[in-house]
Image 1 (tube, chains in turn cyan, red):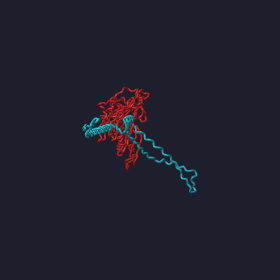
Image 2: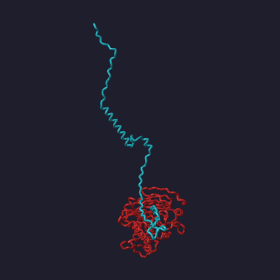
Image 3: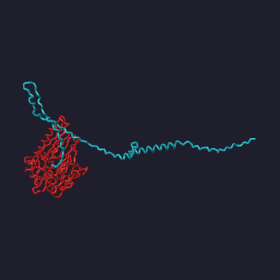
Image 4: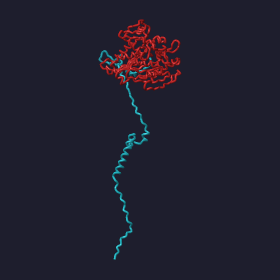
Length: 129
Length: 328
């Protein structure tokens, strides 16, 4: 007669792993949303303060001195000078250049002195007189 | 024909300068002809109103023994201007101090004569005080009747246009330049600027320091008047050796030593600027700030310090004046 023994196994019964359930989508999306909003808020504040992270660090900006912008109004004084030709000097004829009997004729060479540059106008001054 | 002209000549005991820009007046009279008109007018002004010319209308008027004297339009205008300046300055610029100015030693033209230097002038001078006006000033007795063409005043009461003459000449000459876009007339430093374009391109007017001759300040004037008054140019020593100049205290009839040696005023016209500059110098530093403040101007103190009056008050330290004991 056979004994029906129950099978005995030396192995300890396996503990069934506790299977965690799939995380809910709500907290994940909430966390992502919070992180995104925080990130954009930080960037917004930084940009508003003039610190664009893409442009470099504060240290560089601090070292570089701000250059003052100077707006200069340049007023040009226009001096309109009427240049009159110098009076013609007495023509100086080349000696022997004129032949009374022939047709050869040396044109008189007229020397003009170059007009002197116009002096700058004197400044207008108010003073006791 | 367009163009510009810059003319200088002598009149009114001073140097006159006329600058006219006529680049936008094509088809009208030229700047040269306009400058000639101005010169002719100012010579006529001088001939009529000089107290140093015996044949001038002013000299004849001052010696006329009648109560009511027929007067030309120019003389009436000059007297009215003098009375206006007296009223405007509360009597400080008094046009009737003729006997006093002559008694102080200013009885003939000082054209071409150098005044005392500030170094020579100041150390010997008495204490400082501002000028004062009198209630019953004689200038109030003048009556100008334009309709009748006369001026009345007590016989013997003379009129001296010295306080307003050059400014008035510049203003009246400016009337000859209507239509020109930009012009400047300087009568011995009493300056009138006009023309619509001058507002866009103002004239640069330097203020000359009365002691050092340097030009510590520059005004860009696009319209109106600017004038300077000072004690140096017309100063001298009296027979007793005491220093004198032409700016008198109406209360005493004596030259004023107010603590200022020069003042410059900006105003709507050259004549107003001239009157304000004189009143400011006569008033001393505190009074001068009040007079010059509304329109702007310059005070030059005895120690050489230059002060800008008005909204942009700045004090400029200048080098000491050597040899005068005056520190800068």
